[in-house]
Structure formats: C-alpha cells, structure tokens
Length: 163
Image 1 (tube, rainbow, N blue to C red):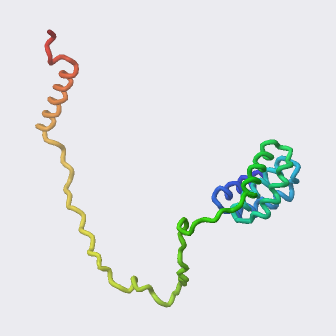
Image 2: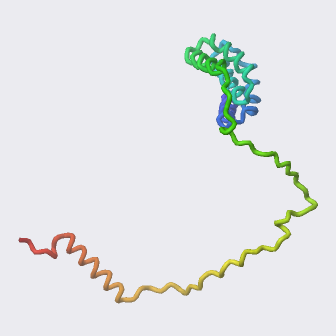
C-alpha cells in the first residue's frame, strides 16, 4: 500500500497525473474518507485533477476534505478550495506561444532529402603524430632542485640576514 502511495506521489511530482490517478483510485476505494490515510489519498487526487484541468471533481472532493478530522489536511483543503473557487483570469495572447501543427508522418518508403545528399563536411584531420615519452634531462632536474631550495631558504628566512 505504501509503495503504491509513494509511486503515486512520484508520478504526481513528475506531472504524470493520469498515472497518479490510476494508482490512487484503488487506494481511495480501500481507505474511506474519515481516516487520515483516506483523506491524504484524496488530497493527492485533488492535486492530480487540478493538474489535468478537471476542476469539477477536484472542487467536489476538496469540499469533502474541509470536514476532515486532521487539522492540517483540513486547512490545506480550505486553501485549495479558495484557489479552485477563484475566477479564472483571461491570459493575454502574447503570454503564450502557439506551436503550429506540423502533421508529420513517418514514411519508410522514402528516405529524407538530407539522407540522400552526400556530406559536404570535410573529413576530420588525422590525429597528431606523437613519439615516445622521454624523461627530462639531468640539467632540468638540477635547475628545479636549485629553484626549490632557493624558495625554501627565502621563505624560511635563511637567505635574509637578521638586522
């Protein structure tokens, strides 16, 4: 039972309201509304119905939830009821993007035009030639050691005589 409820909550969080309702409806049948678990299940169902745009079912269930014994669920139901009963405002047309219907159908007989043309891109260049890795010369080793010893003496205060 708890696995189905957690799965329904995850579907609701993903925005998959149909899947969430499919999981919640059998749970709602097994848990009556007066119980806290039944009220919680119905609150999730109200949220899913709101996401689907079915405000009629959400409003009816939300009104029932305002009489729930659980104080927190009752307050949440009252807040949702205010949202559901609020008048819907008209949205200006320039606030939304309308995508045209492209009516694209997949055809297996004809290949797309881009697949028939030869590629105009040049071939990638060959990888650079590299030789075997060589160890640094003895002179480089001596230079690095002298620089490190000099920095150690400078930073420790040995190179500067005290005044």
